Length: 429
Image (cartoon, rainbow, N blue to C red):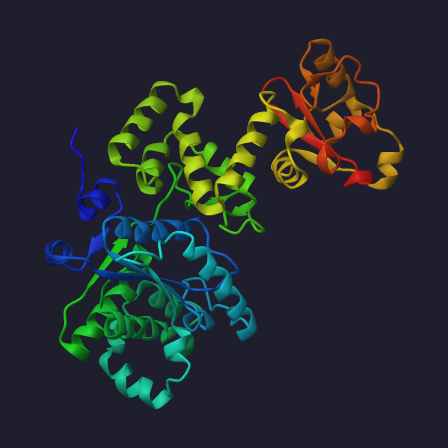
């Protein structure tokens, strides 16, 4: 088996190299010594999401290869937003953008190392944009851009053919290009990375630096990931998978990876795992040989959850995932972890009035959607397939007692080996 060592070869082998401005010249530049590179993240939401994770990991891969990454948080560009094909973005209040900028900065920081010879930096483009006058911007930046070329952008063409586009969003490309120029001047940045949907903005920055300074710099984009069924990666029926624990719980984040389609697993392991490619290949092989064990999914879930949420949260969600299906101690789970886990299952949270009525276990199996009737609950219990807190139910007609409730007022209901739901009582919620 060939072991890939060069960062560009590694990216290509992982399917992460969609395009570059000049691959041979970029290889020569990287071979000549440590290179400063950057990727930008706009605070158009309170958190980054799975679509941003590839870019965070790309910066980390380059740093592990000896280069100097810069994470740019767009306090200025986030005030505007990159044009969407569907319509104009809502302009968020400056105070909200500032708050989101701080939150996203902390997320970017988790992926980079700020010590050593190739220590990372975090910058905010508001620092060099806020004092820029309109006259300076038009003379020093705008004069280097062709409107004809800007109109060729797919998102701009779509907007012109539909609802139209404001001058504000049309100018976004100039601001992102100006970021590259500023980082080139201040930190000798010679590579910008991003997703393939950013290719027009990436190359615009390269061209601006060439026009202003005569220097040649580079852009590299990764492909946009889609699932085997054609759906956009990082989207589920319940919505976007965020990197913020308040928006997507660590348990839900972990389960997203565990539940990945077997058809998507090879691509996901290569794209996201930071493990060497030979180890990735072994995981892919082991998963293909025993798909029911979900070896690769669980390994990736642990690695990604640890990166995003830390080892303590990962340990907690793994314990919860194990305990829910009868292979661990439910009583050891804390209220926050158990609540997050149960809210990813069919569940019901009883009102005080409903709790006072003392519903039977059979009623609760029906209420949370695990069974469709009390008769079905009785049959499940008779056949040995009904459980409360991993204890087999003998009589489903009795109510739950207070001493059966777990942290946060929960009781975990299970039908058979794999169907889990829950009920929460308000008295201790």
